[in-house]
Image (cartoon, rainbow, N blue to C red):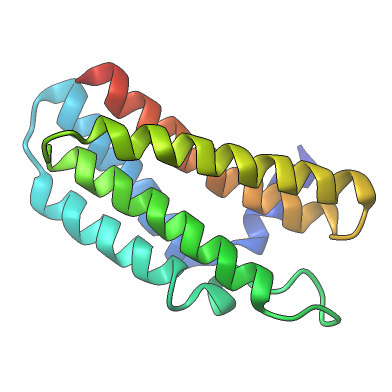
Length: 148
Protein backbone atom coordinates (compact mmCIF):
# COMPACT_ATOMS: atom_id res chain seq x y z
CA UNK A 1 0.00 0.00 0.00
CA UNK A 2 2.90 2.33 0.67
CA UNK A 3 4.17 1.80 -2.89
CA UNK A 4 0.79 2.72 -4.36
CA UNK A 5 0.55 5.90 -2.30
CA UNK A 6 4.08 6.92 -3.22
CA UNK A 7 3.28 6.20 -6.88
CA UNK A 8 0.20 8.43 -6.70
CA UNK A 9 2.33 11.12 -5.07
CA UNK A 10 4.61 10.92 -8.12
CA UNK A 11 1.66 12.04 -10.25
CA UNK A 12 0.77 15.74 -10.42
CA UNK A 13 -2.34 17.18 -8.82
CA UNK A 14 -3.73 18.44 -12.15
CA UNK A 15 -3.41 15.00 -13.67
CA UNK A 16 -5.12 13.30 -10.72
CA UNK A 17 -8.00 15.80 -10.80
CA UNK A 18 -8.51 15.34 -14.55
CA UNK A 19 -8.37 11.55 -14.29
CA UNK A 20 -10.96 11.54 -11.51
CA UNK A 21 -13.13 13.99 -13.48
CA UNK A 22 -13.12 11.74 -16.54
CA UNK A 23 -13.92 8.68 -14.42
CA UNK A 24 -16.74 10.43 -12.57
CA UNK A 25 -18.15 11.91 -15.79
CA UNK A 26 -18.16 8.47 -17.40
CA UNK A 27 -19.87 6.88 -14.41
CA UNK A 28 -22.49 9.65 -14.26
CA UNK A 29 -23.15 9.36 -17.97
CA UNK A 30 -23.62 5.60 -18.10
CA UNK A 31 -24.94 4.81 -14.63
CA UNK A 32 -27.42 7.67 -14.28
CA UNK A 33 -28.08 8.56 -17.91
CA UNK A 34 -27.04 12.18 -17.51
CA UNK A 35 -25.62 13.49 -20.79
CA UNK A 36 -22.55 15.36 -19.60
CA UNK A 37 -20.72 15.17 -22.89
CA UNK A 38 -19.54 18.80 -22.78
CA UNK A 39 -17.66 18.28 -19.52
CA UNK A 40 -16.30 14.93 -20.66
CA UNK A 41 -15.00 16.52 -23.85
CA UNK A 42 -13.31 19.32 -21.93
CA UNK A 43 -11.75 16.98 -19.36
CA UNK A 44 -10.55 14.48 -21.99
CA UNK A 45 -9.04 17.20 -24.16
CA UNK A 46 -7.28 18.77 -21.16
CA UNK A 47 -5.97 15.38 -20.04
CA UNK A 48 -4.72 14.64 -23.57
CA UNK A 49 -2.94 18.02 -23.58
CA UNK A 50 -1.42 17.22 -20.21
CA UNK A 51 -0.05 13.96 -21.58
CA UNK A 52 1.24 14.78 -25.02
CA UNK A 53 2.67 18.25 -25.35
CA UNK A 54 3.44 18.51 -21.66
CA UNK A 55 4.30 14.86 -21.00
CA UNK A 56 7.92 15.69 -20.32
CA UNK A 57 6.78 17.74 -17.32
CA UNK A 58 3.77 15.83 -16.01
CA UNK A 59 5.12 12.31 -16.51
CA UNK A 60 8.67 13.28 -15.72
CA UNK A 61 11.96 11.45 -15.92
CA UNK A 62 12.62 8.36 -13.81
CA UNK A 63 15.74 10.00 -12.36
CA UNK A 64 18.02 12.85 -13.38
CA UNK A 65 20.28 10.50 -15.35
CA UNK A 66 17.62 9.82 -18.01
CA UNK A 67 16.45 11.88 -20.95
CA UNK A 68 12.87 13.01 -21.54
CA UNK A 69 12.41 10.64 -24.48
CA UNK A 70 10.54 7.93 -22.57
CA UNK A 71 8.19 10.44 -20.95
CA UNK A 72 7.37 12.05 -24.31
CA UNK A 73 6.71 8.68 -25.98
CA UNK A 74 4.58 7.48 -23.05
CA UNK A 75 2.75 10.81 -23.04
CA UNK A 76 1.94 10.39 -26.73
CA UNK A 77 0.60 6.87 -26.15
CA UNK A 78 -1.45 7.98 -23.13
CA UNK A 79 -2.79 10.92 -25.13
CA UNK A 80 -3.90 8.52 -27.87
CA UNK A 81 -5.66 6.45 -25.21
CA UNK A 82 -7.47 9.46 -23.81
CA UNK A 83 -8.49 10.62 -27.29
CA UNK A 84 -9.84 7.12 -27.94
CA UNK A 85 -11.92 7.45 -24.77
CA UNK A 86 -13.15 10.81 -26.09
CA UNK A 87 -14.10 9.29 -29.45
CA UNK A 88 -16.07 6.55 -27.76
CA UNK A 89 -17.69 8.93 -25.28
CA UNK A 90 -19.13 11.19 -27.95
CA UNK A 91 -20.25 8.08 -29.87
CA UNK A 92 -18.51 8.51 -33.18
CA UNK A 93 -19.34 5.62 -35.51
CA UNK A 94 -16.99 2.65 -35.39
CA UNK A 95 -15.50 3.72 -32.05
CA UNK A 96 -14.76 0.09 -31.18
CA UNK A 97 -11.88 -0.23 -33.63
CA UNK A 98 -9.73 2.51 -32.07
CA UNK A 99 -10.50 1.10 -28.62
CA UNK A 100 -9.36 -2.37 -29.65
CA UNK A 101 -6.21 -0.96 -31.30
CA UNK A 102 -5.60 1.05 -28.15
CA UNK A 103 -5.75 -2.14 -26.06
CA UNK A 104 -2.99 -3.69 -28.17
CA UNK A 105 -0.81 -0.58 -27.94
CA UNK A 106 -1.29 -0.37 -24.18
CA UNK A 107 -0.56 -4.09 -23.86
CA UNK A 108 2.79 -3.43 -25.54
CA UNK A 109 3.41 -0.57 -23.10
CA UNK A 110 2.58 -2.83 -20.16
CA UNK A 111 4.97 -5.47 -21.48
CA UNK A 112 7.70 -2.86 -21.86
CA UNK A 113 7.09 -1.49 -18.36
CA UNK A 114 7.13 -4.95 -16.79
CA UNK A 115 10.37 -5.72 -18.62
CA UNK A 116 11.94 -2.51 -17.27
CA UNK A 117 10.60 -3.32 -13.81
CA UNK A 118 12.30 -6.72 -13.84
CA UNK A 119 15.56 -5.32 -15.12
CA UNK A 120 15.51 -2.72 -12.31
CA UNK A 121 16.51 -0.03 -14.79
CA UNK A 122 13.77 2.36 -13.67
CA UNK A 123 12.67 3.04 -10.09
CA UNK A 124 9.70 1.00 -8.90
CA UNK A 125 7.68 4.11 -8.03
CA UNK A 126 8.01 5.43 -11.58
CA UNK A 127 6.87 2.14 -13.13
CA UNK A 128 3.92 1.89 -10.72
CA UNK A 129 2.83 5.44 -11.61
CA UNK A 130 2.85 4.46 -15.29
CA UNK A 131 0.83 1.33 -14.53
CA UNK A 132 -1.74 3.47 -12.70
CA UNK A 133 -2.11 5.64 -15.81
CA UNK A 134 -2.48 2.60 -18.08
CA UNK A 135 -5.01 1.05 -15.68
CA UNK A 136 -7.11 4.22 -15.83
CA UNK A 137 -7.20 4.20 -19.63
CA UNK A 138 -7.92 0.48 -19.92
CA UNK A 139 -10.56 0.41 -17.16
CA UNK A 140 -12.41 3.42 -18.57
CA UNK A 141 -12.30 2.00 -22.09
CA UNK A 142 -13.59 -1.39 -20.91
CA UNK A 143 -16.37 0.29 -18.94
CA UNK A 144 -17.44 2.18 -22.10
CA UNK A 145 -17.35 -0.99 -24.21
CA UNK A 146 -19.43 -2.92 -21.69
CA UNK A 147 -21.90 -0.10 -21.03
CA UNK A 148 -22.75 0.53 -24.70
